[in-house]
Length: 233
Image 1 (cartoon, rainbow, N blue to C red):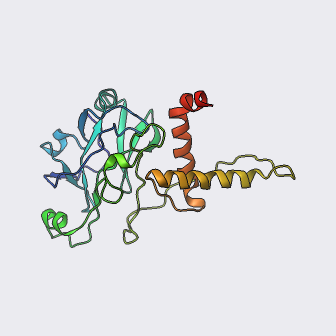
Image 2: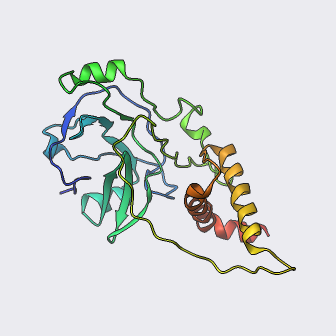
């Protein structure tokens, strides 16, 4: 039985508007076709295969993603889990949070009285679906393999729900002498990576708070395509 994304079971399904899903498996860095549709909140919990759910806080999000057969099997056999935190879905395996899913279902933030119906919410609130701001899903692609890249979650400034996440510092020792200023080198590389990623789709603001996401994305792409990159050299 598929594990639920959150512990709170007060989640209800409904038939909402269809939305475009990525054709590539949503598991981070998987390049296989998403040949199977996965219901994030399982049908047995919702009572039917609903394509949208209402969360305990009254907001709503899409309930469908595409996975390749091997990764779909990992989720359904509880060898991996899709979790939901602060408006984003994450792939969790072996108890370790890997990365946000490469495809994030649309999420509608509740801005109305809870007495209003879900139909009113969906009809009156504009939500972002893949491709609305950057063209078709496949326009948001890796410059090397031309597969879709994950779209970073852009938090709504009016949304006060997200609590601060636990943080820790990960340091790197760099040279700092007349021959080389290691900190400046890394700052330059991170900024160039940010600009390159922006051309392909994922837009990160410049600054200290986005360094982790830029480095994680860049290193993930290198690991995925490392053999090809080294061979090209």
